[in-house]
Image (cartoon, rainbow, N blue to C red; front, side, top):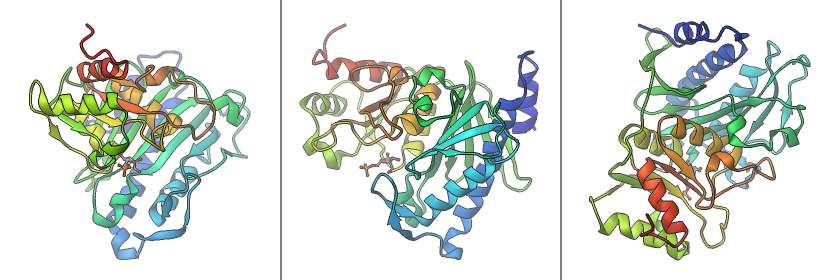
Length: 325
Ligand code: P6P
């Protein structure tokens, strides 16, 4: 029985120069994950499933659990001086932690409750997180390449609560054992299959797709192995299936959404780091997602992520060269 804390501390021994700060940050995401899992489990009993009545900075209907998960994460990092800055899908501006000392080396960025339209119907949900160097501690210091992330991952709230993270070459998977309240190691090295059998995209939006995207999805339906559609309304849930079984998730550019929907810093960058470290890939159709340098805190990009073969094929379709080697 290898707990999250034991695994992280034992891993730390392989990095003699490690200060232990990143280890503590990763353990804290475990704590936040347990708290959010509990709120989701009893949300319906505590009338937490509705909306706040407001909208978030994205103009999206903000659910009470969006706001609660955001507060839990802010509280999780607002002590110990490890984190100087936080950014969230739910907050227009960054939060600077006043008690963080000058050497609060990290910034944490998160989508606290991804897929919140699933809350009312008990669907899968997730928290996506990215850990970066704080830089100068200003908002503009976060607008950097995804390759500068020091760690990234997600918490998946489903029949089980899972924690997936990468802080180096490997992707780790933990499963919450609720009776003891510990995340237990399930896999120390998750590898994404080079090819899959499922694709995740909202076909209801196909009327606005570019011809290249439409041709790619049509190819998946028509040619080669038959693919199945698996689209849950939760990026984290759809991505996790693809991480384990292969395939591709798309949120492409569309009419009226030329940059797609998903946000670079706290959705696309962290999942792209997990995907690449597991042997998969992530692209905007024009460049690798990890190479994207966003021009603003909530910048969006068209997003395709999954198995190396499907993502490479998507790139060829996006360039209008589907048959190019
Ligand atoms: P649509 C949830 O809002 C989210 O960011 C992802 O989790 C999900 O895959 C997507 O948006 C769903 O968006 O437009 O298909 O409803």
